Amino acid sequence: MKALSASYIYESIDYNKSSSKNDDVIFDNLIWLTTKEAAVYLRRSVNAIHTLVSRRKLRARKFSNRLYFKRDELDHLIETSEFRGG
Image (cartoon, rainbow, N blue to C red; front, side):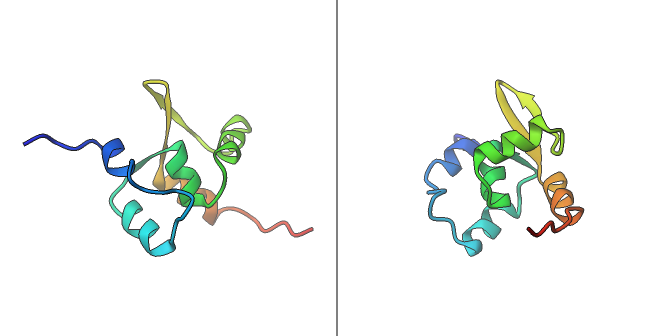
């Protein structure tokens, strides 16, 4: 039996139509997230994720020309953020 890769599992997901129930199921068992998955998880754009990395607010690991993020570090980013209203 052929093992399925994580990229195969997520190809069928439409990231533009995300519901919180589906997101919870998707991310429950993941430790490492791609840039696109991190953007969905944080409900931000991919460009916003790249901006956080370039400003060193978020640590990324590079493997095979792709950036990966630890879900725990994304949670920590949210928990330690301060609200800055305008």
